[in-house]
Structures are given as structure tokens and as C-alpha cells.
Length: 382
Image 1 (tube, rainbow, N blue to C red):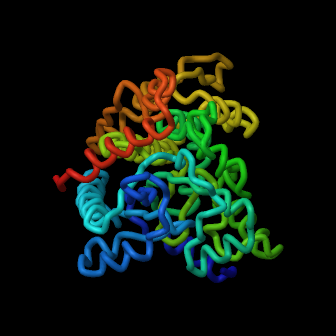
Image 2 (cartoon, one colour):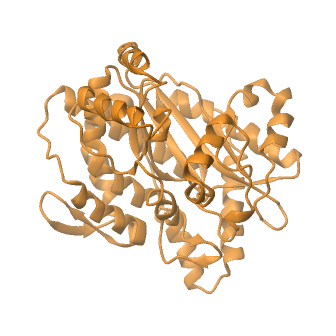
């Protein structure tokens, strides 16, 4: 990447269509009998060659025991989810036909990261070479949502406004209490393992516009800190290749219904932030240290804890995060026809109830894998 490439970023975003949607979901590849991670991505990808629709929409991630399914560009949320449901159904059918199971928790409960081979691509070879232990340690699974945002300056300002939203979405999505064979005591061990280890990750700085953001990227390039923009791993970022704002904070979701609801809420948050930018709605640009307080609470306690109203300096039950985000996004949700419905308890809460009742980690994970199979594998496009 060079200055000419960054010039093209502005051009890419000038051609973007507002509120197109893309959904990306990461699944662990499992032995169906033992539920151990198995490095079978290349095998499954080869097996998918006879199904062009599926083959063109699966991709690898960092480790060989992980597979990602992508919706492609949907005209809106409903189009993107319809595409994604069909791709999921085909992916789960492919896995079953080839003697594999798929999991959808933010971490694998007991896998040893030292035994997971890195996928063989140029990008991930660079990641491994640059990060070493930090890359090896990152055996995590998440869900990303892209929303088309016209104009790169506007996209950066949308990201600025989404910074205090990140902990709320994390608390809602928390689905990873286990790590390294132990109950971590956290609701999102994935976030602690990934976001707190990778450089240029987590809650981004506030930039105010493209000029300052571009200056930062040029600094990273000039100092040989990065060689491609995707090495800026923040939890919300403008995606230079797609002309989107990408939300990256959420754990993988155990059920298809939760994934759809979370995608809808993320789309609504990004779109409402864009509307607020357009209408110059007053906005308090909060210090990173304040947002990090809520990030920690979301990691540790998820929806079972309490978050902080950072403008008022008062606590509130974390469960209210859903109500607060749906209230804020009410105008754009009415415009786009988005009505996310979440279960009484999220993935981490359901797992914690089993843990408290005396279930083993194997029993807890098996229950999650079962609900994943039952909800993702049996859907049809609507």
C-alpha cells in the first residue's frame, strides 16, 4: 500500500452505496465424536468445489481448524441474511457429509493453541511472522458485520461515534466463558485473548475525519509498522477494500437466530451513527479510558453485570444495553425494517447456568454445538 492506494480509498468510498450489508461468521471445525478442533479447512474447501455458490463464499481464517462463511454484498440486511442463511445451510451440509461438526462459540473450551497449525496464505504468513506468540495464541471465533457508507470522511466519523457502543454490543454477544480447559470466569474470553493482545486492536482513537486517519495510516506505513491496512485490527474500522464500516467486536453466536438479531442490531447502530453524522446530532467524544471501563465490564460479566452510563457517570444493569441500543436506533430501524429479537439469556449466560448446575466443560460445549447444528443447519433462505 502507498499514497496512491490511499488516494483510491477516497474514490472507493465515493462510489459506495449507503447501507448495503455484508455478514461474516467464523466457525470452529470439530471432530463430531470428541468435539476436538481438527485442521480440515483445506479439505472442506476442496470438497466444496462442486458447489460453486458455497465455494465462492467460504474462506479461511488464521488457523486451519476454522472456516468462515460470508454473505457477499446484500442490498440491505434482509437480502444479506437471506444469502447468509442459504450459505450456512450448505456449509453445515458439507461438513456433515464429510464427517465434521461446526462450533460457534468465541473460543474452543479446551483446545491447545500450540497444536493448531496456521493457514497457509500470504496474509496469515505475514501475521504469524509479525506477531509470533500473539498470533499463535489467537484461536478465537467472531462475527463481523459490514455496512456500506458513502464518503470516507463520513465513514471515519461514523466509527468515532460507534466507540462507546462497542462494549454494549460485546456484552450482548458474549459467548466464550472457557479458555485453555478452564472456566475463565469471564463472559468473553475471546475478547480478552484477542483484543487485549493484538496491536492496533480494541477501541480505536477518535480521528474526526479522513485527514487524521490517513495521516495515521501513512505513519504506520512509513515506519514499517504495517504493510496492509487490515493489520489495523480495531473493533470498528473503515474497510478500505469494500467501502464499508466494519463492526468486529462480537463473539460468534451459538444460534442462527442470535446471529441474525445481532447482525440486525449492528447494522442499525452503524446506520444510526451515519444518520446522526448527517444531521449533526450532538455527540460527546469520550476518552478511551472511560470506554475501556465498560469494555472490561462486558468482558468480565457480559449481560450479568452492570455497565456505566458514561455521560452521566451512573451504573445500569447490562441487560439494558439491548433496550438502550434499540431505543437509540429506533428511527433508522423503522426506516430499514429491522426488529432484532434476542433470547432471555445470551450464549455465555446459558453456558454459565450449566456450569453453576455442575455440568462439565464437555457437556456445556456439547450443548452449544447441538443448538448450533439445530439452528444453522436446518434453515432455508427466506
